Length: 383
Image (cartoon, rainbow, N blue to C red; front, side):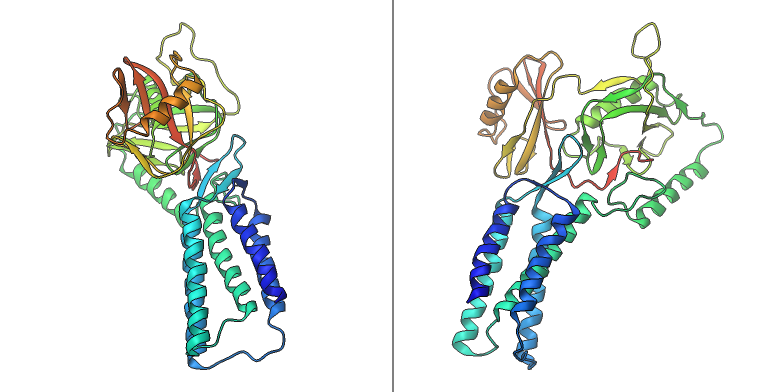
């Protein structure tokens, strides 16, 4: 009876905590499974453990069910990074639905066991151990998505990148170097640095705030000015799918256009350099975003869409256009109104660029939206 009371307090508290935004730390990923496992181990007492075929089959099914639900929850949890790079986790409708499904299945199985006797009813200690197993599976997925247990490597600051990815990246870069034409111009560092004002993402690659040096792989195929504009465009990208035929190697921070020599590399530069004298846009310098980023986040409660722009449930950041034709408050209200128009029929004067999540009014960029949720697997151009 005591264990049941503990379960009725501990499990709802655990689920409640998951449903609220909280920092993901190594301690938080370890602590909860250990608590459930310890209580479960103490709850077994000295009674005999059934070893007949039905009991073993039931235990195996329960283990698979717990692990499967845990992996699913870990995949479905909303994850993003705050402004200082700390990973944040928050449950959603899928999270609570999976918990209800797991608890409902266990209650149904317990009822069947009590009525039919086909397999032994689950002991309270077993319940805690299977919940611990489910939390372990969930937290391993979360740890992998956030890269929180990644060890520093030669190409450091790349959370979540395994040794195989490192070897693959090196092999790809080596093959590219071998395939390069002798006539290809040498890579050239662009004058000035490109400043990213806030921590951001491009697909699954984290882009920490800071000054970046842009280097064109072949200046005759892609100028510094074009590389700077392309980097700005990729930072605006909504879903991480770069415009064809562009591709990203996050390991080396290299963007390539098709199989030709056109491309550029970005790397964090601790010593920012000013753009060349005389002005103009001939260098690789720039600033992103050009408009102000609004404080806080806008939460989309359900998977939604505005025309071709798909908006998964989660938190979004709103960034105003360079000329700031609307305020942050007005842009939030407009975004809320547009969510009520899944067919994409925006009010007169408004238009949408689904590739960048940009809403414009009368031809002027009003604001952009971008999900904060990101399963970050690499830091762009990590060194």
